[in-house]
Length: 425
Image (cartoon, rainbow, N blue to C red):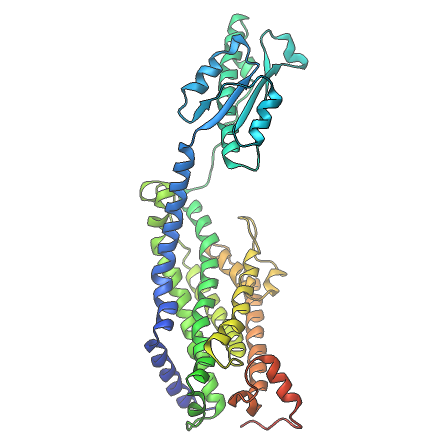
């Protein structure tokens, strides 16, 4: 293996890749522009939908309202989001209309039970709604808020009539107070989003180059010409592998940079003008940890995808063979959902998922260096296993020349017809 030859071939592969429109779009333009733009569109659409749903009117019917609490009906009717529908003769009929979608909520006032019955005109309320329909659930929340506010005012008036201190009626109030800072809130958002996008974009960045440098060359009938170069097969494959890993690493880092820069403007439609209330910042040590994680992911995805794509005869076949690796990479991202989850010895042994959690901890300022070492060791072991597998496959002439007519199954069948495997270079 000659370093100068590998470097020359590596530069050649990079120049060829940068001439391919699909490679440039998927590895450079996509992470820089599309995902931040897509995220902005999603958040803007979410805000728009929330505004539309807030503007919908809830169809509500009220049964058994006591005369002493007539102001409840006035309060509900004063709200533009609530439409008071004339009640049917019975509650059962109203609930049938609710099930048919003609109503959103059925409000039934009932006499208070237990100790509450001793207070004249006291009441309890039964709210019938369809939990499977968002519009009905929203109507329940709107009406329950109005009734609760009325109940508090009515109890205070009753207490004044009986000379009962207001504190004895109210009892106690819950006053929530968050001690988190704006930076901590911003860190929470970054820790949930940046690692996920980094893993996905590194995999996507390796996806097209891995197929193009293997199955794409076979489809263009340039693979045999490449094998005639004054370089060993191993040098050619190493150069291709490094070129795929480089593009995957670039895609991941560009995506993280674009996401981090655009996070404030993207989140502005939801969290307020100019992103008020959130401060997006990363600990200084988070940057090298994330670069290290992206490097490990690029090496793994490049090796795994190239092995599978090399069995294909056409670019389309390569896409089908490599796609399982891309989708399987998303499964470990489900690990550690929740702000309190951190990297553990068990999760550190799961490839891809361990790197995602390592970067997630780094964004939050948590650096468990022994587990980070385990994570990188496991990632290195996965890369080595892929390279050893690739080395063993390269020994077969049928694989290099594609005489098995494509696909892993056909390759295995072709090997079964070979008496002795040929000796590699």
